[in-house]
Image 1 (cartoon, one colour):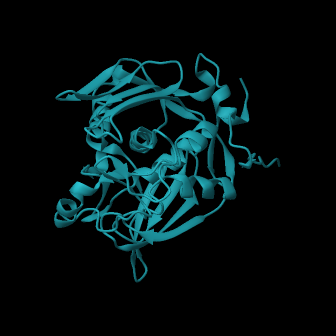
Image 2 (image 1 turned 90 degrees about the horizontal axis):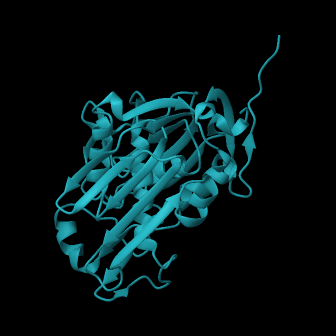
Image 3 (image 1 turned 30 degrees about the vertical axis):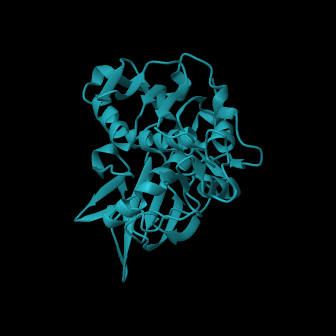
Length: 318
């Protein structure tokens, strides 16, 4: 099997965003840049006055907090919060290697979904790289639990997520989505789903230092039995789709895309981080494989969004 789609991909150019953090309300600029093959997702903080931290891997071992978002410890008392929407867009759109540069303590929330990042990736395009794509192939099931909530990674011939939520809310209730990943399906069915919260929790969250930048422009707000956002929902089941969006971003912290199935019930950022820790607790749980060596079809790699430019790498000949 010699398909260009089994080669690693990076961004074809830089992409920049400006906004503010949904929790900190701090203004922030973020840039996504191309990165070398086999580097995965890297992140660094621009501290101003010419000071920039060394890039570190976006990895679950650096997760320092999972309350309402995923926060990474970059070392030397520097952290970046709410990375999951950025990494979700990169992973969901089929990017293997990228450098994230942030000049604030939190990634910008933008419209509360991953779509602005995914749309910008569409516009700049991707560039294939000489190296083969590598995957974490699940060999043995791993499950972590918190009362009746759980998250699991299981062997599966593909890339699938089966996620269910259950809220005591007439607007949300119990929702389930089974998603077989392709970049096109990610863009169409997942990327636009926004983060959400309840009006009854707003005061307590702000007193605790969270949701200081939250508004109807970047979050779905549920009040009793209605959605307060003037334009309503983007998907009928937008709530479970956003949880799936978050899971895709959190699972990318494994360092490589996962070949297997993720299942979750009442899950969240904490269980997503714990299931990765469980996976890596034993080398018997997984193996690292090249895309070309997967004993199954890989047509999903070729299911690209219409309009996404993918430049083939050029090999110099002397």
